[in-house]
Image (cartoon, rainbow, N blue to C red; front, top):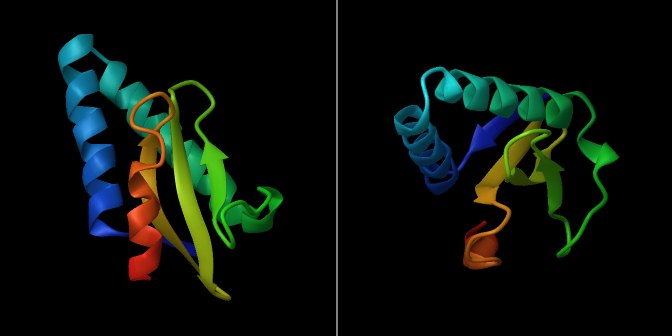
Length: 100
C-alpha cells in the first residue's frame, strides 16, 4: 500500500512544516516525524479509520492538530486529499473530493 498526495494536500503539509520551523528549533522535525507516523498507520491499515463523507477516511496525527483526509482508490493506493488543521476552516477541502 502506498500514499499518493494531491498537490494541494502536499502543499498544506509543507506550509505547516514551514510554520513550525519558525516557531521553535527542532519543532519542524517533530512535525515531519508525526506526519510520517500518521501516514505509516494509514498505509498499514487503511480501513481501520471509519468512512465518513462517503468513502473518505480520517487519520489524525497523535500530537499535532492535523488530520490526513484520504480515500482508498486502488487496491494498493491511498489518495490523500488534505492535510487538514483540525481547528481552521472546517470543510474547506470538501470541494476537492468532487475533482476525483
